[in-house]
Image 1 (cartoon, rainbow, N blue to C red):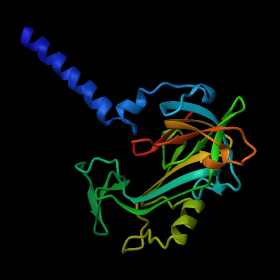
Image 2: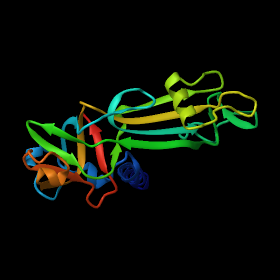
Image 3: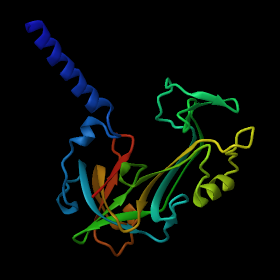
Length: 228
């Protein structure tokens, strides 16, 4: 009985460790940083702060959703990248098809991202963004098309603008999975990273602005973006 209890406890411990190591897009350390208002962040502190997205100059139009934003990242896959490749299926047009939706051999057809400068503001305090971003999932949108479903007009226009052939050798639509991550203009977000207090012009903001918090990735790979 003791051996069984020990085995169960050990199994649970392994699951917990795996969850913190492999789940989500942030490291365990970055998930544990404190959340603070911009004005409460100390210089050189790893922190999560928050505010409203304010564009600096022009904005973007996300190619698939058509939403106004300051950042988008698009991936177009032939087949479902998250589908279990060992699932049973059938063959058509020389491609293996699973449950009539996704190919077992998924590959990226297009991967693109674009961003415009922005900062966040809360209670009059400002935080600028100084490094690459990784956007978490609240504003991730998924567009699917399959053997009997044509791509939406926005997706179709994007495929054509990137010269992507979405037909099989028999002229049948491929199963496509299109992912779009965006940061809409005017939304409220969180930023996780290392903060430095700087003069506004050194952080990329107008010089008539007071000192601002510059969020960097520090020794991590990205600044992590979440949503409120």
